[in-house]
Length: 470
Ligand code: ADP
Ligand code: F6P
Image (tube, rainbow, N blue to C red; front, side):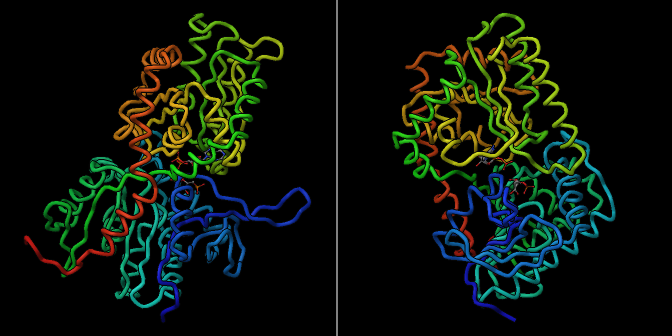
């Protein structure tokens, strides 16, 4: 059975979550994370549909329109949220794919749920997609969907993009269901990754695990060719650039500085509260700099905005406790009345408020232990049309491939982190402008539109039966 959607995004989450406001009324709020930030503008421009979970368990919602997008909710039971989303996606795959910075849990019931929910997504996509439609499946939660969908609807053109890192073979081999995951991905015509190294990891696996032939970025599967290639994701540079041209953004930035007690330097971190983001490492470095007197009392404040994330997964609960303990300790040791050195906000902000924060920040501290890309780094660069501001960036974020003029750092090296944070705080305006100009050129050229266009061009021009070079 075919439907009428000619362009369909399939992602674990819809771009909006169903929330209940203070008066008890249901409302929609933008979902957290980089995937939504990147894909929502693409869908709005292409007038397609988005199939995904609405963020709460045991809800059966009808398709609806929001913000120029046609949204089709996929229901999940409470047990599926626990086993498929919190379990296999975020307690097994997330830590495994992020270099095992957390210990993955290998639980057979999680895997059962992952297969069941992936099948539901594939079946719903097969129902709504028009004949020959383009379907773009997103991220690690849905790696089985491409093959399941191809089986149901061989007429479709199927793309897949992985927003997080793809691990080296030695780590991936630990996964008891490794073969099924690779076979699932190979249902796509085009498998996109953030970095070239991830695409080569995948191609090597196809050869070693499934004994498939390959040439360059093409893998030969039965009578089909699957391409695996890097497409580094980006942000809507022009939208952010426009927001910061508004005088009210800079007025708000000045007000933020004042609310913080007019420190000489504002350091900023903006992340989902996730153990891959290196929040503890950057706070340790800042705390030690205060302790040693390298940063004088009142000279600098650190603002850490941490969006609540995956709060029912144990590792995330533990992380929240650790970070809050650490913030309490630093403030306990170094605060003066009314002037804490660390401002920690466990909440989400509007895009406008985030833009003002980026404008207020003298040093943006982005220190993930591993990150597929990290859009926060690119958002900061997009917002600094004044050519000022220093970006401290982990070598282990995908963004480090492109933002070479950032203050690059190994976040495991606390002394190195301290040194680079001080260097960034003390850099002169001319040096900052030189670095920022180069980074802005890169993000302005390779923005989210270019990312989506490159992926879609590669998908739409792909000749799936080409046997060239075999
Ligand atoms: P991830 O996809 O792992 O969450 P990214 O850095 O790639 O990491 O993307 C995070 C996205 O979520 C960015 O667009 C960022 O602006 C947004 N975001 C992060 N923290 C907040 C927050 N506290 N309030 C609003 N948006 C946030
Ligand atoms: O980019 C990684 C990612 O897991 C996305 O798939 C997701 O939209 C985002 O982070 C936020 O995660 P979650 O949907 O688990 O809140």
